[in-house]
Length: 326
Ligand SMILES: Cc1cc2nc3c(=O)[nH]c(=O)nc-3n(C[C@H](O)[C@H](O)[C@H](O)COP(=O)(O)OP(=O)(O)OC[C@H]3O[C@@H](n4cnc5c(N)ncnc54)[C@H](O)[C@@H]3O)c2cc1C
Image (cartoon, helix red, strand yellow):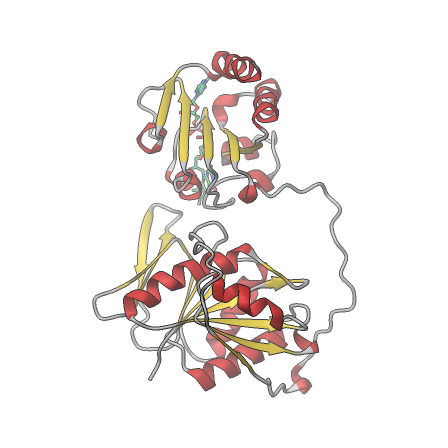
């Protein structure tokens, strides 16, 4: 009997990643619909103390494997650990973050337990016969495909950071913590982590920003971009962009919002000179409040925006900056 919705709890250097909390939030909704449990898989070394916090974030149970081989992410030990857990526990579904780690891990596990994997899901729901309906963009984002894994278990899905909403933390929640010993086949450990070298680039994570000033082709040039930065400084915001602006070289890909960029969910999202292509909307439509400024009154972005201003950003942005400064 396959049951319960499992979540891979991604940690880096012992720090639980936000995507794991977001997946716990989604798993909670799915498990409540199915009347099943949410189970977190926590792998690492000296990490058992994190389990209680994960229960507060929506899990009913945490299966924890604490082993030196699991301290840092390496494909083979993590794959062996999760494969063993799946074979022992028979989960109905497993959700994994579509991070660099999750994208490496998901396909390995699905191949070892002979099941399907739907990557980069943007929506997960329970269907009429209790199968998971896994929706993701297909054909370059022009259609949304809903995929069902009918004949194999577990149903596996990866979801990008920022797509799902985390469960509101409740410290009074109680749950079970099970520690498990993994029977590693170390003869298969062909890769060893020798050294971790951190990139020292001044990276900003736009998914963490509360306010984003996002610019599109309508921003025009460096001068227009500098004006967005001035506004961002006043609002303590970060600047992000559509792909058009990234392609023009005005801004780094780290700050691209959309299907091939990042998925963001800030409290306030300004779409400045962005038309509202489906691939852009896929990355920002869940923002709390969307304000769009566009000179074309028929621009599709106005259908998604909460507040729309028809006008020239070159004139409006400096006025807005001055007004907010005051
Ligand atoms: C597979 C695939 C993946 C993609 N992934 C992404 C992605 O991750 N993110 C993304 O953003 N795009 C993505 N795209 C590209 C997407 O289809 C659009 O081409 C892109 O989003 C357009 O960017 P834009 O809105 O800035 O430019 P445009 O569509 O050219 O729109 C510019 C807008 O600015 C307005 N404007 C011009 N001047 C002014 C002014 N002075 N004041 C006010 N408004 C003005 C115009 O009216 C227009 O609405 C992807 C495409 C494909 C095929």
